[in-house]
Length: 347
Image (cartoon, rainbow, N blue to C red; front, side, top):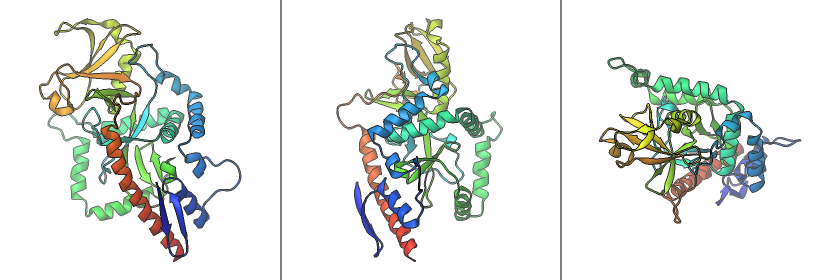
């Protein structure tokens, strides 16, 4: 989408997710000179050449190999995707505390473009051990403690209520995060902080949005593969690497399958693996009668797969429709911030 920005002395028609960055760098003298700049507007475009370059880069990392398909099952794949939340995180809210459901809800999270998703994945694989260590530490802080004992997240929530004002907290937050550097996305107007799993604007103060890595997916509604929360996906990945389907037994329902009990926010959550090495399949199920109300599952469970797969619907998915609405809002936000930035330069 293209818009016109002007501050009286400077007017230009720009692509809001790429060309705005070039304009800002040009008028502020922030552009780099000499050599190949990985953050230049051309390198941030969602073009076939940039996608191929990043895909080739990812294949060189040792960590990439373990995420590739290890079987020939139709349920197996190696493509991950990165997502960002439509709703900003609240002040002092840790990214690991959301979403509350095991399956990401439709319209709540949107996929990054292919180029951006590959760039985030490449950075993730470069520092995987460090990033996962930090992430699971944060996740532990959000987990509830034994009954009768206040959890760390509850204590943080209580402390937040006792804070003087949210405005003062927000100001301090922006001061602390002013110099942080992440993976450039959306044409360089935003960056992704992989330590905190935040997506944040670069050229203006704005809210953080939760970033989620999708590696295991659930077929919800029969058409759309939706990402599972990272803690559930990690447990499924461990079961997959152990080839748990080799330990199948007859379940109370009569199904010959391997049961994997999962720790999550839904009582009785578990996965059932059936089949052989090249035919295994998996379903997400819960014993609690309220399971269907929690994540929209029927008594037969929700089909799972490893690795991303596109929607099976020939029509635009709800995610596509919601993303179009969100992008329209995003364009207006960028437009007004550009006017503000250009106006500030002229003063």
